[in-house]
Image (cartoon, rainbow, N blue to C red; front, side, top):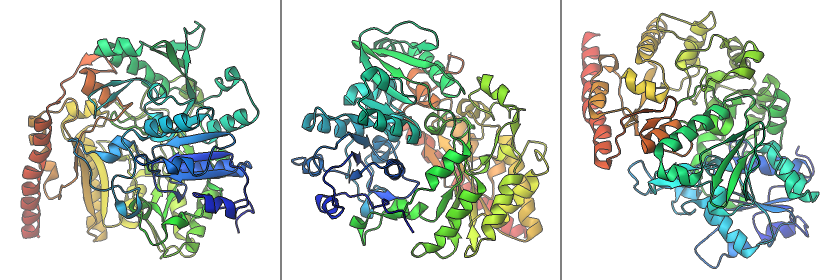
Length: 591
């Protein structure tokens, strides 16, 4: 039974009136359809603020093309507007790597495209500021978080300043927002002055004038300097990424125009107790009733999934997870996870199959440094690249025990791992990492894979993998050997599906030819290749724009010609499909 105040968030005047409200504390404006599920950030923040007694309403996917009635319908909130673009950057949501407009949107009812604008956070914020100039606007989510500083925008093919500057928002909440959003809400309610508000951790603000030199502050090259000098942009990112992966980073200052953007250090990594409190919120795990009878594709993908933790210490150069969720792992307790698993039985249409027990990287649950004092001083961006950190505890015993307890829960038939895994956490080129590694791989393949195990070697050529921040392809060859052994000994036919990236910085057409013809991939049906898309706040996007690797500031080849990018990807399909068919035919003939 839900607590008395666990109402479904109103999205219309009629729904507000049904609750008997005469005011709204916070109105959240989002580019996604509203789904009351912990996989959707808008729902998490709304439920979290609700827990603390605030009245929250949601305006999902407002029409920005008409007379703006969607922005006006609920009036002004008592405290502020909260704005996000949805679960994805709106430009990634709208366009392919070749900059072609997508024809669908998984976060919109019936998958229809066109329900949100390009650069949604900026568009929404500007509208709200024009309609309600005296009401604060707080921006957050993926789009705001990863555009908090000067960033390369692939779709405009230029550098853009912090989204605080382009949108005119009052505050930016970056990363996972429960704690900073609650602090901002209390501060606005209690009338804190601007100076006190600007000291809240894990937020960013734009301030006019000059900054004051003081200890514990990292001052970057200004936006205008980066526009003139790509090397300075790469150098900036070197320091941004370094501090994003520190346990105790500095405040970051970046000059722009007549002022500067200030990025406050984040809150400490969430404790298990804090994580449990976020998942203990009264989510219905259903789309809002306004969508009755309509399908939301993104919801269908995750409605029977369970998230076990946040964060990723893999440090892939093309990935934004660490920049948003952090490098250090925040894990839920087994009790919290099992409580959610049992509750799945109450959901409509649940047939006992959990689609995913995972997170950004499924097998990092509960992992951490053995000696936290070493972690507190560490400046590595990845705990796995270029080699696994010797201080990392990557024992999979706790995770295996969790799987066993989930599978023994009443009503559960199967629990699958749909999230990505890092096989360098349990494999070396010579064998297994520890005693838990072999049992983990065996159970993963036989008990938690729904037909095909998806892994991401990303490329076959080591010099390209080095630019990606990924391990040598020899490790994938070892994985395939062990994977085939598990299948052979069990008499099963689970498939192995590798994912690859074309036209990543450092990759040439010749490299893609070697990938497509690599002998270790024979017999594998390979249709999973993604053309590299430079997204804000990644090492790879900085390489793409600047021509420098921000890790060592050395030049790197980048394929920027759109036609040659397409050739890299199409070459893969033309060659790899043929090789896969030949390999499968030979395998069948041999059997």
